[in-house]
Image (cartoon, rainbow, N blue to C red; front, side, top):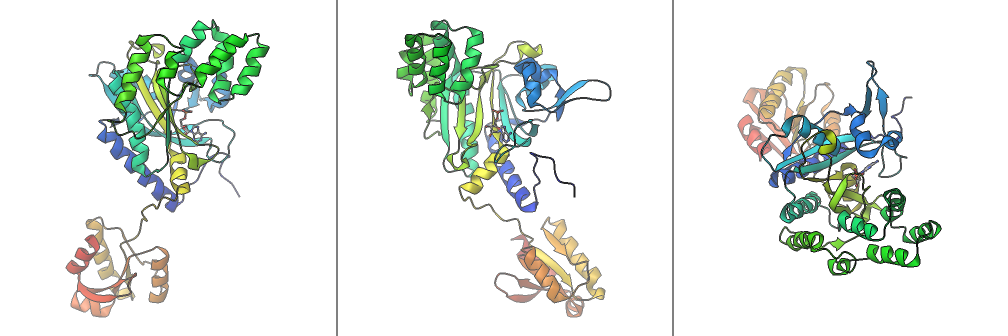
Length: 416
Ligand code: AMP
């Protein structure tokens, strides 16, 4: 038996219906914030991803040479591809540009619950406006997107990479050393961070200062470490707008680092406690990629939501997804009734009513059983009597009630 590759997923109909339901909800929300959908290729030049993250990233990618010897990679995320598309053909478009996307991503991760090698992201990029209000709207979009799909308990944390950069500057911590500190900070392993800094020869004062900053939980505390209104004021203004955009609750978290490679300024993350260990659902912020890809400097910000995790989170929170059901299952009782049954079926289909028809010629009892397994709401029975009177017999599968009606009446019932 050939099995699916490690870290990939199959989606049987029930699962797929949930995914499409979530996707549709997200699409409606993105559009309600003035975003337009875009799509980019599944594979890109490897360079697109190494340019941003360095050669080290190749180990985490599905990278390969094609038959022409080109170095390519399956995309591990969609920000770099969307910005590549912008630089390639959309730079002259009026700003701000607001793009959203759904796309499968590929990472050579160690598979576990909630962590796959092929997974889907939903996300967006905002190009050409980084006012406090624009950034507040972006964070609000992430919040509303997840609230609108039906998640009850989401936790939003907002930080700013300019703050930590300033603190590290003040402490005279060099670039190479910063890179080593970030993994500890990213995982909130502050004890391990302290041990590491001691080993590296940092003074108690330096360590205390960094840890003090990382534990800040509001802007006033941050002001004790970052004495620069040019950094603090826009951030404060953005935060002050969040309630107007409908955000009920958030935390300031100065320890969000999100791989400092290309993020800068405001950053945020959303977690769902119901997800357990892999609880991070969304990450984003302001970043700088356009010049790296040869474009003219412009402000950019965005976020990505783990789509698969969103569905799991809803399931874990006990969300009741709407069931996708057949409105009717049409059963010709004998072979002579088949053409009439097909006519009725196709009339329903013209009105886009989801129906199916028995083409196996099996007994009515078996057809009823099958209709039950398909969760059909109604069964339409067609025999000699119905043919002769130009009617159908419709059985409501929930109440068991059975009626003889005209085709017109049937269509009205099924449309309703
Ligand atoms: P990132 O691009 O790493 O910031 O990821 C954005 C979101 O995608 C994360 O918050 C996760 O919800 C989701 N995600 C990242 N990696 C995986 C993975 N291997 N499997 C499933 N979801 C993932």
